[in-house]
Every structure is written in structure tokens, then in C-alpha cells.
Length: 300
Image (cartoon, rainbow, N blue to C red):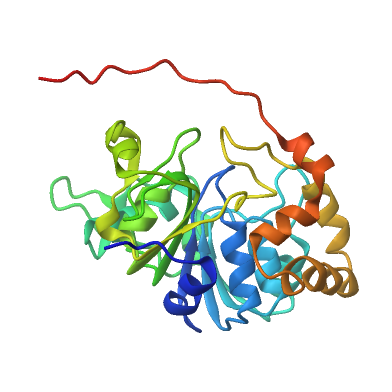
């Protein structure tokens, strides 16, 4: 039985208005294609959770998809603020729940482990405790000392982009690892987008690279270039110029609407998006091969 489907169908079936969505990925493997499909399908009142909201959440907020953000850092990497999100927060149009990086990942770890909350050592980030009532202090039953606790985070949907997966959703990632595994295990439903769909034999040949097992995956979609303008290690480079460009685009409502009309609503899918970027962009983002050394797993 295959879990292979189209991205449009996966979003249609598994993402509902009002859901809590966790789009995983750190630096690379950010699931932009899925975010664009959510915008295209006009989902509303979403709670968008992510340790580091990237441009994709700025675009989803601009499109009117979100009612709340749960995060531990917001910004356009290397540029500055995400203009749209900042404006919506300052105007009171969107609710926020802010954490440190460690506490955000700890929440996912608790959710993935089936725990109601998780303890942490006290940190210097005491202002977050005043700003966010989800932080609590309890007594350690072993030492009597106070520890900080945060509640589990169990998203309705985790969306994870990976280098390769098989048709059952067994998914492999290499390069920088983020919170993909924790988000997937914590979520009620999991959508995988993959640069490649490969035979199960390929996945089984390198089992230690499988971060997400198929038994927790609900849908797997072959979506090459799904992470642009971020990158996918070994497949294409980061489009640094676009991060600068987005800062200019997002200065005005007209610029934002024109971008969404041209690059999201005006395109049927990611393949059309990639083709629209053009051959010069394809050449600029192309990476050279750099293979790791083979590993001998042995056999009887």
C-alpha cells in the first residue's frame, strides 16, 4: 500500500482550517512548496508553529492564513525583521507565543515522547517567563530545587521536506539536521515532501540516515525544488538574493500582493514555479557533486 500522493491532495486531505501546523527544517529543507499550496488552497485561522519562522510564514501570514504564531525566533536570516509578521504583531492582528530555542524544541520532545510537559534548567531568559504564561516553575522532587517546565507541543500537522523517501514515507535526511524527527513524532498527521522517491531497497541500504519512519507518515509527495529559496543539501544551493529581494517586496502591500499573485496563486504547482525561475537561476543554484565515503554494513 503506497502513501504516495500529490502535494495538492495531501494539503486538501490533511490540512484543515484552524489546525496547528509545524513546518520543520533548519537553514535548509524548509518546505516552501507546501506553504505555497496551503496559501493556494486558502486555508484560514491556522496556528503556525516553527522554531525559526522563515519567509514562508511571512508569506502565509500575508495571505491571511494565520491567527497565531508559536515560535522561538522570527526574522529574515541575515537581513532583519520579517516585515509582515512584525506589522501584524505590532497592530495586534495576530497572537504570538514566544519561547527560547531550547524550550521550543523541548516542547516538541515532550510531544514526541507522549509527555504532558518537560522540565528544563533555569536560563537567563527570565523575561520570557513574564511574557509567556506557558512557562511554569515546579519543585524537583529529587533535589527540591525549582525547575522550569513547558507544555508538550503536539501539532495537528507536521510538514517535513527531505532529500529522499520511498513510497511508504520512510524518509532520509542528511546535512544540517533540525527538529524534523521531533516534529514528525509529535504531530497527529505527517506530510513528507521529497526531492526524490526511491525504491525501498535504497532506503534499506543506508538505514541510519532514515530519520522519519513510514509508519508515522500519512502522505508522501515527490516535489523537487520544494525548499527554494532555502536549499536542499546535495541538490541545489540557497538563493541568498531572494532573501534580500523579499525585504523589498514586503515593504508594501502592493508588492506582497503582486508576488503572491504571480508566484503562488498564478501557478498550479512547484514544477511550474521552478520553470518560471528560469534556466539562469537553475544554473546559479546548481551544486557540484561531493559524495561521502561509502559505509560497509557487512552481511552474513
